[in-house]
Structures are given as structure tokens and as C-alpha cells.
Image 1 (cartoon, rainbow, N blue to C red):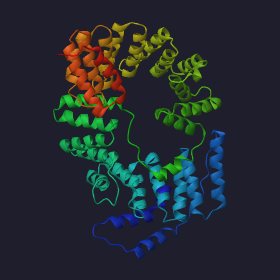
Image 2 (cartoon, rainbow, N blue to C red):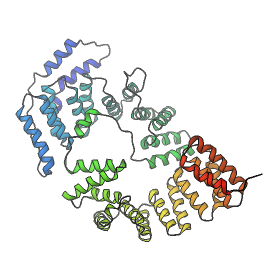
Image 3 (cartoon, helix red, strand yellow):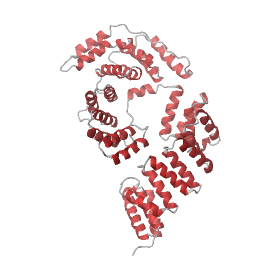
Image 4 (cartoon, helix red, strand yellow):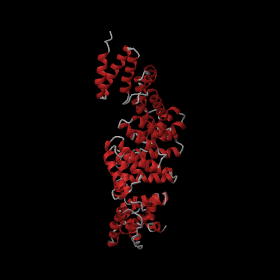
Length: 490
């Protein structure tokens, strides 16, 4: 409470600014800010670093000594707050930012950082008060506007929340571009206000702006279900599950300056996860290795290396050791068995891989990726009937997954079930996307196997025309080869 009272004067300034029709001059604002700074400057907070890693301890204590050495420097106290925030010392960070604000009352960053810290430690109202004070200094910082919309939404102040989000989207937004997070935020407001149709439109726009926005697909599905569009809702619930953890990044240069100050294990693991998710497997694995040097039982690092082992032979010799250590810590976590199983499959150990992957789907029956991986391994073991069943189980979880559909139909065509695949393939060809060319070729192959060469050529020619216009170009040689193998139709 003491920390909040220290900024009361500035918050009052912002409150006055927001009164309808009020017009404070720059001179009056400066006077009010100066008045707030006549209050005593709080002391530099003393950090608690007991039990912290040496790397983290050193970073915090160095920033603390600098703040003590420069007692009149708002920048030194602000930097100390940033280091504390980077290492999740939230209460101490808030105290450091409040001190920096007293010393540099016109610096936007300290007030913005204080709002972010208070959101985590004290809740939306106190964070909104601090953010309002920051906005009186700089009103065009898009991440702060987005945060304001989020906080107002949490507080149930939907009209004000909508205004904040709309300012990021409209033509009069001072050059701020439209964004998926703002569309999503405005959609939530409309849904809360029972304007389901408008909410659905905005959720759909958010998914168009960021096609793997899991939360937006979920909101869209809820809106569609409310409007009675059950088929569309089922599809979008599936998309939401498929992209559960994916959301659009928000470019926040100020917050980035805090994040780069992270050190120690927490920093390594966060970076490793980002690298692994971004496809930079080797870099992410190296950071996981570094963590295990300091903490051999770190579960996140063990999982990171098992993940990397799926595509790299670098960990083949220690694969069983990594697997055993991870399983000892959390034996019910399905990804241990999934990553281990697929790493074994990469080594050609398909029988052992199938056992591990079966364990993964036993632990989590709705784990579509696990069923798909198991199906692939079963195909290598020449067990097509079981593979087809696993593809079906994966599709039961993600019925709209076009890639999974193709895997299933390819397996059916390749293993004597072409006649059964055709009725499933034909409706799928009505969808025009990146998978349609593959499906057209697969349909042609199914007809060829069943002996209908006329239709096989017909669909191959359709595929050839489509691939030349839309790609993918590497499919063209296969189409041309299959066309040559078919006798010309007279």
C-alpha cells in the first residue's frame, strides 16, 4: 500500500486529465508533477537474494550497488527495478520503480514498468492506476494501449476497454497498425456485452490476422455455437485445440529491454523453449545442456533434449539416460514417451518406438500427435491395419486437420483400401488450400489402383494444371511420370 500512496499525486493528475471537458495546460501539469516530487524519495529497496543462483545473485546485487552509488539518479534506480523485474522480484521491483518515478517524474518507462509489475503482484485496478499515470506522459505507445484495454476488460469496464482496442484499429489511430490482439480483445468485449454476431466477426478477423491464434479460434467457436452454427463451431474448436499455446507476439521494445536482463537457469530455459518451438533445435538443445550442467535433474531441460533427439543423432548415446531421468521425475507425462519413441524410430528401432508411443497415447488418449506418430511407425513395421486405425484416432481428436486426413488416405490407398478412400477424397477436393494438389494426385492414384484409368488420367490432368498455377512445384515430376505410365485416352 505504501508504494501506491507514493504515486497518488500523479494519479490524481491523470484523473483530472480524464474528466470530460477539462483542459489542463502544460504549465499546470508540470506544476502538479513537480508537487508530487516534493514528497520524500523512498529508499533504495534491499533485495532478497538468499538461495538464488550465483549468476542471478550477481546481477541483482550489481544493480543494487549502482543504485546506492547514484542516489539521485532515476536511471540507476529504474535499471535496478528492471533487473529485479527480469528475475521475478516483483515487490522490490515496484519499490525501485516508485523511487525512479520520484527522481524522473517525466520518464514514461518507469511508470509503464510499474504498471506491468503491479498487474502481476497487486491486480488490475492498481495496475490501471499506474498505467493511466504513464499515459499522461505518452499516450501513443501501442503495448500500453493494449494493456489498458486488457485491464479495463478484467475490471468489467467494457465500454472503456472497447475504446482502447478500437484506437489500435481505426484509421485515426495515429499510425498504429491493426493487430490480432486488439481484434481479439474487442471480440471479447462484444461477447461479454452479448453482441455475439459482432464478437464472431471480430474473432474471425483475429484468426485471419494471425492464422494460428488458438484463443481466437476458441472464442470464434463459442460464438458460432451460440449462433447455432454447430458444424463451424466443431471445426474451430478443433483449430483452437491444435493451436492451444499459440498467440500473436506483441512487439514491446520496452519490455524487451527488461527481458534481455534475465540471467541464470530461468533465462536459459525460456530461451531454449523459444528456440525449440521456433525450429532452432541445435541452439535450443545447447541451452538445455547448459542448464543440465547446473541442475542434472531439471525436467524442462531433459524434455528439451528428448525433443531435440527426435531430429538429431547428437544425443543417440545418451538417449536412454535422458529418458530414464525424465521418466523418474514425471512418469505420467506423455511427451517423455512420445519424444523418446520418435527418437528411437529415427534410429530405425521401430518395435521399441511403437511400445513407447503406445504408452504416450495410453496416458493421453486425445493426444493426436502421438497417434499420428504411432501410425507412422506401425507402417514401417508393415502393420497397415493398425496404422490406419491410429490415423483414425488422431482424426477423431482433430477432425479438420487436413494433413492428418492426407496421411490416412495415403495409407489406405497404399495398403489395399483405395476403394474405401475414394468416397472420402472426393468431398475433400472441394476445399481449395495448400493440400488440394496432394489430394488430387492421391485421388488419381486411388482410381488407377481400382482400375479406372480414365478417371485416374482426368484427376492427374487436373492436378497438373493446378500445380503449374499454384504449386507445389516439386509435385510436378511425379504427376508427369504417372501420366506417362497411363495409356493415352482416345
